[in-house]
Image (cartoon, rainbow, N blue to C red; front, side, top):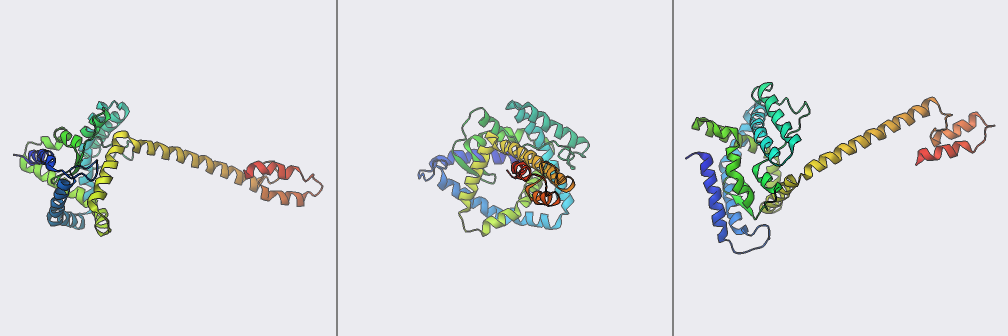
Length: 292
């Protein structure tokens, strides 16, 4: 039995065992008692094995190697992300992710180098759970899966499809494949070491913080509110650029042609001093629109 199959069975067992929970404190987390027990188990595994391994990996492995490992597995995920984008009728995003995979797999040395991002090809992270959500499948209750971490009933049901869609899962050499899965887990854990340390030091309920953050993030990804935020940021950037251009033009007029009708208000007294016989009314009248 492969490592992936074992994780799938563990996820299925979590769904079945979660039916034993009875005390409901949060409508989105009716299995909280069971989930907290699994969370404690995962936390113990993390403190005992995963976090020390990730810390050693981050301290010993050169930064460029860590970046290459992260890029390599991230490139593989772009292919499945492309499939899910097409399944959600997002043709432009699907083509974008497929192009990312093609470019990085060739010019990027099998994905070790990320050539696509500097070229303007934005990375997406779509999975089968998001695709089911796009077509109206409700997320269902929150679940904490053994070793796999936060999930929902819908996302748990989609896990076998996501595992199948991972190109690394189709490597025939089982020891090599499992080694890659372990390396990816350590690399991902190392990338969030600083954030997890801050979370551990904070005086709060880590279980609730992780649960609420996960549910909010998944809802955001299904509804694509992050893309709306990106669009809003682009609009704001354009507005800022227009304002900068206007300010630059006003600055040039103030320095070179202080007698123009569009001169700023603070240039009006100088104009009156240099030409005392000019009518005093045009300067303040013409400067008021600029002040607004």
